[in-house]
Amino acid sequence: MSAITPTLPALLFLFVALSLVQLHAAVIGTNTPAEPLTTERIATLPAKEQKAWLEYLRHSEQQMKADQAELHSEMRTQHVSETILPPGSRGTRSIPLNRRAAWYASDEARHIADIVVSFQTPAGGWSKNLDLSQHPRAAAESFAPDNSSRWTNAPDNDIPHDIRWSYVGTFDNDATTTELRFLAKVAAANPKQAASYRAAFLRGLDYILAAQFPNGGWPQVWPLQGGYHDAITYNDGAMTDIMNLLREVSDAKGDFNFVPRTVRKKADASLQRGIDCILATQVVVDGHRTAWAQQHDALTLQPTSARNYEMPSLSAAESAGVAMFLMNLPKPSREVVAAVHSACAWFEKTKMTDLAYRFTGEQGRMLVAAPGNGPLWPRYAEIGSDRPLFGDRDKSIHDTVDEISKERRNGYAWFNDTPQRALDRYTTWKKIHPLPQGR
Image 1: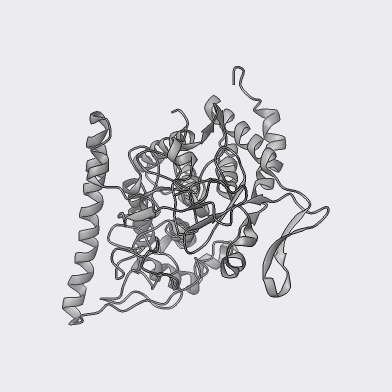
Image 2 (image 1 turned 90 degrees about the horizontal axis):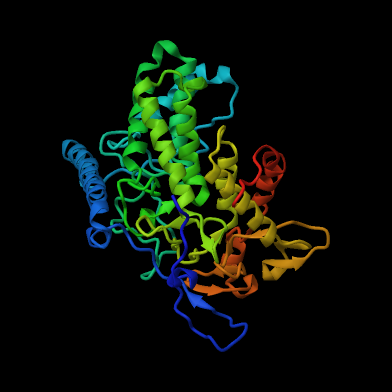
């Protein structure tokens, strides 16, 4: 597949220009919401592509209805009009993957695994930020904790269409892939009690396969929730986490050696489509491949927005994760090799040195001079110019971090050093995989 060359609106980040005459304006644009996947948008595709997308969307809608119907049936049986919210937790802390092998044979591990199975959605996935160490899901208990943002206002991109049904099945915050890895570990450590854990694992794999877009990408939430959740999502490693799992499953390595051969073949085919999507979404500027956005529109593959302060742009941390995934492929194609070389060249081009992003007292976090520090990369870079970009909760876009609100400066990772890990790996990798001739 060819990489994505942004259209003019994407190169302008879909911003509404507020001032074109000031060389260094306080606000350089306004972030616009991402478009959901709809039948109307699918109708704009070439005729030969529409059938697969319409079937995908129909399946998503039917699965959401089935998921909701199961919960509503439980509520009627329990004679309740409101669901019970399960305990929440930060990320996936309650389901550790880094314990000693013997721990996964313990009563504690099996207790957690039983809870994990109980919170699997009818579709086969899991919500995010669940505390899966407390108790098994009860009848009429929600599949998801309260994942709503406390900052949502009327124009907020993060307000769900249905506040009672949000992130019910997601890959955000390491959800679903972590549950699957945990179940595989517990099943391997408890062969006599593995049946229910392995059955739930295989249902989870089916969920991943069903959630994959016809073009090989994955949304953040499935069944689809609308808004930016419908975009191809590299944010926080969502798509690369899925693909790393699929690679290990297809290789039948370690804890995954129980997966049937037919399922492993499906996992491998899904993985290859995912790689094609990665290559197709690498942003091209003036004929040169660069990096990736946090999210790409499912249909156009163009970089798109997410939350109010997350604008269409090149994303250093997510791009580093994608590059490291590609460098870990055992037999990379010429296209993959070229993509990695281009991404690492972009990392070198955009690194910042002698700067630090740190707390400065009353003013909060600021970008300050720090001789010898770095390199750092801005979280977001403008497509084309590579200048750093920063967003605020009012959807305003700035080119200086000092100009955004103190709350956003203190509460968001505007700079990171993740690309350095990719460059460190690249030092060895490029000797084995030189840039193909003619690239």
